[in-house]
Every structure is written in C-alpha cells, then in structure tokens.
Length: 330
Image (tube, rainbow, N blue to C red; front, side):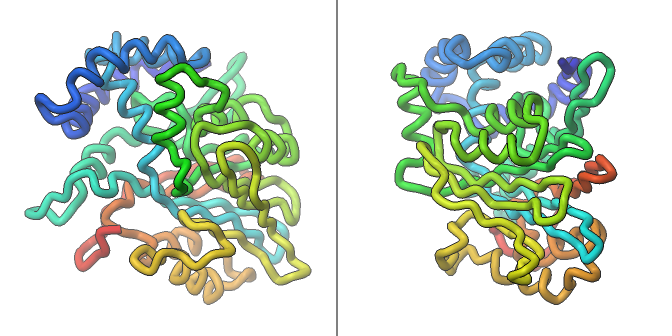
C-alpha cells in the first residue's frame, strides 16, 4: 500500500488549477458532475476507492478527479527507449508528452495542460511490509502507472497507440456497461505490483484485454531483455525485442507502429534513432540517454518529464522539462 495523502494535500492547489484547465467553467458540467462520479464505483479495486480518497482529501470534486484519470489514458504522446550497453547493462528512458490539442498559450508559446501538469509530477515508492515493491514517476491524483521500475527485476513504460478503435470507444463502452477490458495504466500498475519476472510481465502485457490500444515498452534484468509490445484492444500484434545478433542493441517507440513510417508531421522516431546510433552501444548510459531525450523534436513543448531507469541499480530519476524556443509544439 502507499500513503499518497500527504503528497495530494501538498499538491491540491495545482490539482484544482489542472481541473479548471480540463473543464472550463460551464463546459461538460453535466458529464463531470453527474455521470463521472457514478463511474467511480464501476472501477476495479483499489482504484475506485483511491480516487474517492483523493477527492475527499484534496477538495477537488470527485467527477474532476475521475476526468483527469481518464484523460491520461487517451492523451499521452511519448518516446520510450530500452537499450543494452556492451557490458550487458540495461537502461530505460522515456519522455512523457501530454496535452496535445488541449489549448495553446500563444503568449507563452506553450500547451496549457502541459504547464499545469509539471507541478504535479512526483516520484512514488510503493512499499509492502516496509519493503519497496516498485517505484513510479507519476502525477499527484493519478492512480494508474505510466512509468515504473520493479528494482532488479524489470522496467516498464506505456505509450499511446492511435487507432480507429481507440480509447474513447473503450471508455464509452465502459460507461455503457461493457467492462471486460482493462484500463491500460491500471494494468501497468498491476504488473509492477504482482509480476515477478520480465517474462511474466511480458505475457500479462501481451495477453490482457484492454480498454484501448497501447504500446508497452518493457526492459528486463538480463542480456536481450528489452521489447516493444504493440497492442490492439484484444491481443498483441507484434513484439519487437533487443537482438544483439542482429545488431539491435536498443528498441525505441514513439506513437506509431514500428513497421510503418511515422506521421510526417510528428516524426520523433527518426531523430531519436539517429541520436542513439551516433551515441553507440559502447557509450550508452543514463547520461547519454538523457542527451538523446533532450534532442529536439524528441524534446518538445508537450514534454512534461523525462525519466531514466537502471534495473540493476534499482534507480529511477526524473526531470521536469522545459523546451527553450525555438521548439516544436509536438
């Protein structure tokens, strides 16, 4: 279990600011104040109870807490990398980009939601019987997991996968009573909490029915253990793994299927791969991976935080990001 309440109380003013940015006065009010509070009782345990607790402690209305827990499921655009150096050490890094098309601040040249999220970034240490089970970079008030490490076992990040049967449909089905798929970030939290090996985590991430398509980027603790799991809502479409025999010493995912060309308006993959190749397997480290994730447009105006993880050391470090102008909006 984790006691998030001191964190929530310290961050509650920023939570109110975020809620106001999500729900401008008078818009979506019936949905947020009437429909979404009813939805909380349909969520699997312990997530519904935790959302109620966050609302009670922070003073943010229950519907608004539900709303931004849902929004994280459908509005994250990201870059995730798992790499193996020439000594067999595994490194996992990610940029979390959030807030696309959700209000551009012309004066400050920034996305309104992205800026509101930055003060809410926290690193959490989940403990059981006073022992760390996993660590996560998160937003105060959010009960799912987008970025986490089970020290000495595996590392995990989730990226949005845009698809015609995307998150909105799954969420709508859930509201209407069809609830056989799992929320993606609830699954990642469950895997971080309960899976005891890279292989067990891979199977659960590949086979569990989901509410929305996703990419799961998983790193293990042995040579060759790094993969991108490309998911539809029903099944795994592809698993791309590190393969040193093929000179594939890293796997890298943005928000497009790796076997297809990325959208020309949003090609973070090509510059990120160019940087990784220039860095080389011999020189990859947490520091050089941070440099890759700091290269524009991999770093852009949506980037909220960068997290770096090293499974063998059990370390997770996070940095709130700001992309100085000139900088791509996404």
